[in-house]
Image (cartoon, rainbow, N blue to C red):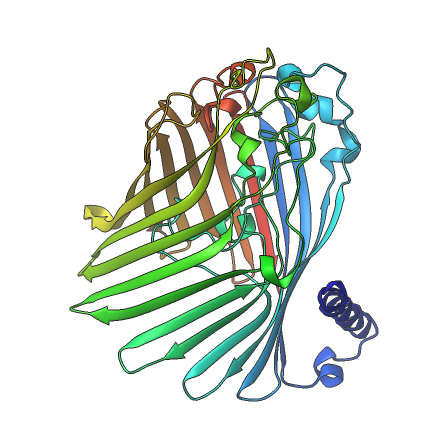
Length: 460
């Protein structure tokens, strides 16, 4: 399987090198790789400055991205997306300067923080689309999206998430692409969808010492072997009836968070100090989902529901066996989550997107760290000016239980067909919590990380 996954990556970077070589030598890349190849490329700069505690320059990210599409025939199309990135801030700052709370994480021994690598090369996506009369197949490394509620993950759990910059990157950048087979069978009034994922990947936390470090990989974490028996699969039936789009789904997969992730937030010491013999691991989940959306003029009403079987929840330390050692216990509980959304347009052409979500842990016990009911809401205001060249928007994400909020105003200006400029801010409101007492706060944890940022993208 490893050889199978390595070959497309090697092929893609060889092809990218050939394109660059041909361009630099004055030879048309289209003449070399045929007229069936189309390319979209851009370079982007992202600069961020922290204005909260310990003001400092925290990001000087520059990256080049190439998206290549090759039409082998009308029925077979290849797509590849690659990115080369360099964050210069790690060459002019060390991690102790960038991270405003180095001492927040408790440990019995001094933390060993590796030097950050400013360079990164990533094959984001590499897949083939194969079209038949009633069947579409997509084979390769890709992102698959289910559900209708943006931001709150209800049934949209196929790809794991990248938390290296918390939840601040664009949505497509937060998803980690995985190798999978995705198919759609078109029936007379319904579509039957299938995903099969042999490539097991899990949520990626920020590296130790990084500014957005929040949860950490538990010591001694056991990952399931990469084999056919452990692969993930899902089924989805969707259709259109009485003016509404609907879908029913089933997903049998691994929880992208290990059980102990909610128990040892902020704890980088030896887990044996808290529980003798405890081995953190990933657990299998079965998720049944339903989504529906209906448009009426400028309004769209959306709803999504998921029932999850097999979720293991972390607990507060307790001496469960009365041996004088503080144990970490896993409690297996089913849980239910839903989301509601309303997209509308106010006077003065202001678009508004409102969402609300809740999660219920069934048969909840006080020992479980997560609350029995957790609620969150978001609202996005958006308006275009100057003949759609200037976009003003503001997103507010509010977590009800902990009374914390993330506020994200942004101005984006399309200078030309090739150049887009943006100016924005990320403001965190809430209490940081006490991670040593398992008082975890998702947004308030970064109360010291308020920042302003600029972006510039040039496409060619």
